[in-house]
Image 1 (cartoon, one colour):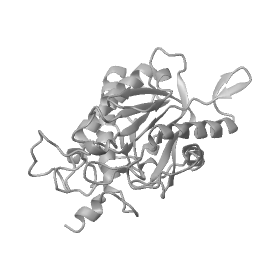
Image 2: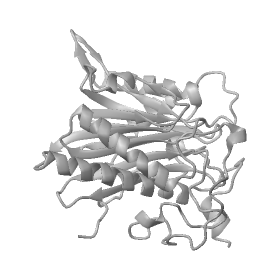
Image 3: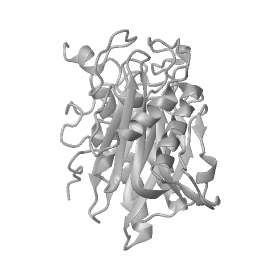
Length: 333
């Protein structure tokens, strides 16, 4: 059976999930929110050496809280962690959150990228991320744009603009797996000076140009990076409608990091805060948990690789850019 994406080829092909995004073009930054119709089980795995996170400790398998209300991916480095506060405020106003007596406490883990040196105006007097977080929550829907939007607005890679990417696949079991990613990597998503993506072997239906694998590869002992800018980190979410426990979500997040390694060279460096959340809505049971969790992890990794390439491929030019986007660089080649 040939693998097929869901109808949107987005993480929102997982029933019950929505994505909202908001951006500030002058600052060159933004926020993405993954929201469930109901709280969902969640895990996380961090592979980069410089992460920036909020409430990830409670996602450990031995911690009390089993489900979360939303996940936030934001620009802004440490300033961007405030985006989750805006999302929490919005969820509380909706009456959502973990019940503690007569109070509701929304559980909103988040992660950030470093995008403070991307050519945008960072001279704000008031941190804009809480506002952007709440705005992104209000925009949550089944459809959202890829590339230079949301937290991908100011994202970059070693040689090209990055962006927000997403992809999905429907498995033979009927389960859907999706990925959402903010591509802001130290390394490159393309091979040398070519338009070919490292993720090419996993492409479905020419979703990022259909160029196929490169025919020649550069010296991989010294790949290009943006180390001098210290402006890195790729953060993402993989999701499924399978009924997974917190430990199984953690394993799925761990497996999904293979997608980073397949699509970005180098990845998981000391200067990246590479992180992946895994979300499970629990709508579909598994007939064979051992075999199916293996395939869910593999699907999450391939979806993530595809999502990374799609994010870079969809990026568009904007005033003040420090790097070209893929289409500006290669449509003219």
